[in-house]
Length: 321
Image 1 (cartoon, rainbow, N blue to C red):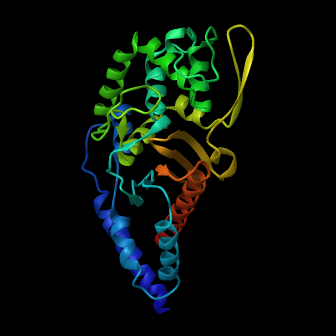
Image 2: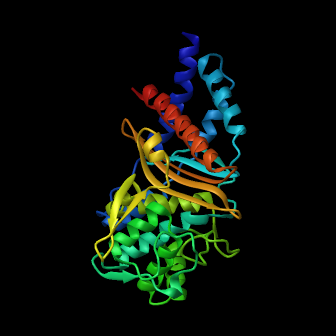
Image 3: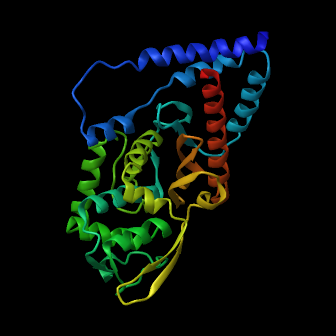
């Protein structure tokens, strides 16, 4: 009984604090964009403040938290931030405000701007001036609709497709980089600077875990974006009638229950990165993980952090019942 009361006392205090902070004054109805920006930027560090104090309690909760903390301390990733979307609770973070290279997570911004500024049915071709890397799946002369090239870029993390879309949307790539940085400023990504559309190594292309969290939450509130990054596999048509089979580079889409996106990234400069989101039992978590040790660890470490987040939110919700 004493243990149960201790747990309820801590989490009950948390509920009181939250209820007090959630009261809003009457105001005029907000536009959809205002609501989107508010939801994207909502962060609450209450859980980060409360959970360490719970470690001093007797009983299963303290033991469970201690075991989780040991696992978190062993992660190879250099930075991350894990957030529950509806409340903005920061469940776990490490170096979340530190500037880091982001590799192909950059393509989230490229995708967003292409969706906002391009006409999905227009035709776009891969030309020699945008064919910058030989490891891309699109080839010189290949033609797609804009919508299908966006899909191919995000699913296969295609670097040449990103350059083609940047030139198509911006008229030239430098103009597109300006659009990227203007959008980043609009979203309050104050620790971010974009210098290319695909995340290839560049000392001027950097962000922070918290900034990329803002971007991912904003992007996922675009239904077209969410549908693309949540697709595990697809055959994407070219204009000449051929089809390109695509398997999403985000392995969590098929290996982690409830995963709904978002984007992988890797360069030697940035290490192995992953922006992910998952929904279970009405709870949606967002996670940005940067510079993990290996291809495999970015997925296993992200899955472990998501598991931790769902467990923390389960305990919190049970306490409120």
